[in-house]
Image 1: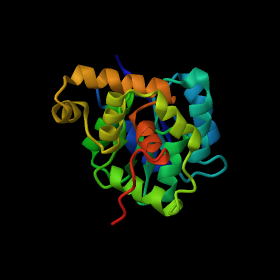
Image 2 (image 1 turned 45 degrees about the vertical axis):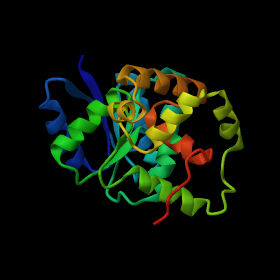
Image 3 (image 1 turned 90 degrees about the vertical axis):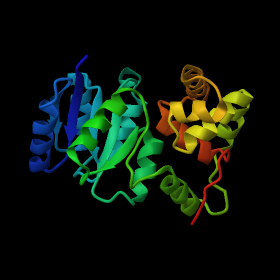
Length: 227
C-alpha cells in the first residue's frame, strides 16, 4: 500500500526537497503541498493523506492549530501528523503531542530518518527523534507543572479502567520502549504487548503511542525525571 504524504511548510524550497525525497520511494507519494495550516487541513481532507509532515511556525493558521483541527475531525481519525521543527528543544513540541501529533523530527534529520519517520507514523507508532527523547518530554511537562497542579484528574481516573498488566505496559511505553523490548522486559510475547497497547489506547482515547506517553505523564502514572 502506498503511503500518501502531505507536506505543510511555508518554505517552498524545503517542500520541493521533501517532495523529491518522498516521491523517490516506491511505497510513498506526495499528494499535496500546503504553505499554511488552514491549507494543510483542507488538503488533508481533499487528498486523503495518510501522513502530514507539518511545520510548526507558518503564517496564519500555524502547525499547532492545524494539528488540533486534524486530530479533532472524526473523518481524519486515521491521519498521522509528524511535526517538523528547526528547534527540537521547543515547548511547542509538547503542545503538538497534546494536540494529537504522532511525534516530531528535526528539519536537519538525515533523509533516511525522515523516510523512516513517515513509515513509523503510517504504522501508528510514536515517533521521537534521537535528540527529542521521552525524557525531554518529561522535562517539559515538569517545567510547565512543577507543583503537579496541571495533572489531568479525568485522565487519572480513566487509568482505573486499565488492568494491572495494561498499566505495566503503559509505563514501559512511556519509557520509550518498543513492543519487542517491552515483551522481553515483561517476559511475554510481542503480540501480547501489542494487544495490551491497543486496549490501553482504546480505554484512554489515545490516537497512538505518542498520546499514551503524554497521558502517562499528565496522569501522574509516570513521574518526570528532571536532570
